[in-house]
Image 1 (cartoon, one colour):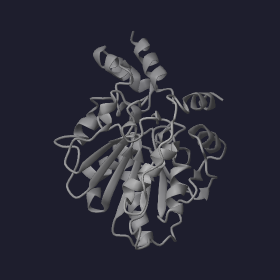
Image 2: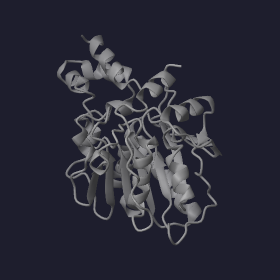
Image 3: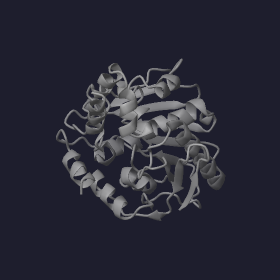
Length: 319
C-alpha cells in the first residue's frame, strides 16, 4: 500500500490449487473457501491477512450454470500486492446475487514476495488466461466478461490484446485502470530522470508496480499501436481524485470500442478514490449497470468524502 513512500525511498538510495510458472517462479492460486462479505477495503484486507487463501463470497462455484439473462461468466482480477478476497469481497457477492456466475483467481505472486500481483504482468496475464480456460471448460460458456481492478485491469487487457483473449472476452471493465500508468505524484517521473533511480525503484518495489509507472515498457507495448483490439467492448470506470494514478486522465483508453466513465461525472458528490473504489456502493452498482444496463439501473448517488478509506487502509497495513 505504501507506493509513494517506497518510490521516495528508492530515489533516496541513489541520491486451493496453486501453480507456479517454471520460468519466472510466479505463483497463482484458485481460492475456494469463501470468506464473509466485507464493507471496507481495510476490513477485507485484515480478514485476508488472517485467513489467507479466502475466496470472495459468491465466487468459484465451478458447478455454476450461466443463465439466459447472464450467459457469460464474470472473471475478476485483483490489484497489486493484494488478492481476490481483499479486492472483491463486496463486488463479487453483489454480482453473484444478481445472477452471474462469478470467478476469481489470485495471480502473480513473485518469488520472495508475500502478496499476489507482484510478479511480471506478462506472466500474470498467462496465468489469468489459463484460469479463463478453466472457467469456460467448467461452465460451457463460449465467452466471458472480465473485470480488472487496478493492476488487474492491465493484466486482463494484456491477456485480451496480446495473448488472444479477444476471441473469448466480450466485455472488459477496468476499475481504476492504470491504462497509461501513474507518475505517483511525480515521484515516478523524478526517478526516470535520475541515473540509476529506476533500477533502485525496482529494488524496493515489486516488478509489477514498476511496470505500471507511466512510460514503462510494458504499457508502451500494450498500448502500441492502439490500446484496444477489435471485437471487445472496453469500459473504464475511474475517479478524478485517484490517489495512485496521476494524472487521472491516464485511466482512460483512447482506442476504438472504449467507453470511459468518471465517478465524479456521474455522481459529483462521490469523491471516492483508488483504494475505496471497490467498496464504494455507487461504483459497485455502476459496474453492475455497465454489465447489464437493460436489467440494472445506475447506482444511487450519495456523498462520499474525499479520502474515504485511506486512513483505515494505512492503519491496517501497519498493524
